[in-house]
Image 1 (cartoon, rainbow, N blue to C red):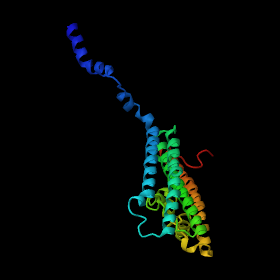
Image 2: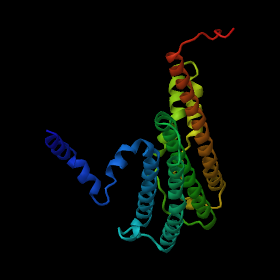
Image 3: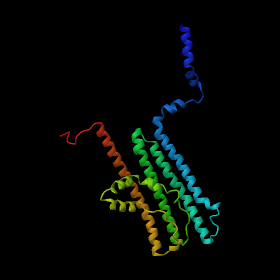
Image 4: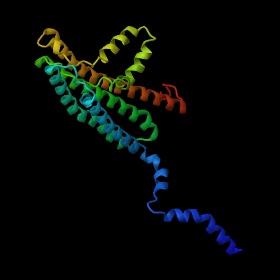
Length: 263
């Protein structure tokens, strides 16, 4: 009987025995310890996204080289487009580095799952979107300055690639202004939204070179960068405020008390 029992145990345990002898087998620990690796995985996703974003910027910038973007342009127009391509090729690397840096920060997070998913990750997304918009706006302002000084129409820009970043960078204020829109303060909300979300798709001031209007356009481009950063930091503060408010409400539901309980 004992012999049969030993044979039965050996047969039943054979998958574990074979599994332990498989080469390069760390799949079980990889899956079972995945909860502690979520932050690292999110960081890796950001790193991969940074690389793909870099390739996308370079492709969008250099696309005129093989798609006939120079056809029909005179010598001055071609020079302006070439300078624009050099400007945005240079810009591609610090812009993509922003995404990589934020990914490294969230990858090293030691927060719990709830804190990581509902606070660290959204704040990181707001930061990435805001920093990228600010960097794009800065290089757009530099391009506007070059256009103003040289009278060339500096080509390029990343309007198509940054179209969805404004909404991502404004999650906090969007929620706040959405609440205010149903209150008597809706006019203030609309005005603040217009001020804190400027249009940064301004590049190419060749026609206004050395004019008051052109100078004001260049000045507005740099002011737009500052407003983008202000909007970023305001959104981070507002989102953290809402998260703290919800956390306090959840804790109160778990253990309700009256404000004067300690009196």
